[in-house]
Image (cartoon, rainbow, N blue to C red; front, side, top):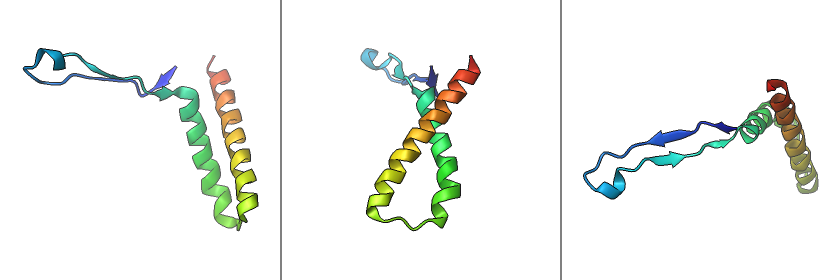
Length: 78
């Protein structure tokens, strides 16, 4: 399933431009993960001082957690 699919018609006299431009949108799972990540980041990282090594592992953990939350949201929608 896609989030924010969009179809736009161009107003032109050129017959090749009269076809719609389709923007398929992003995967709904990716959208949910991005929203989850934004929420986590807004509450957690502001209070942390991370070294470069710690930051890499934190980012990986953050991505995994964000997609786990997204998967739970996708499952709940069924």
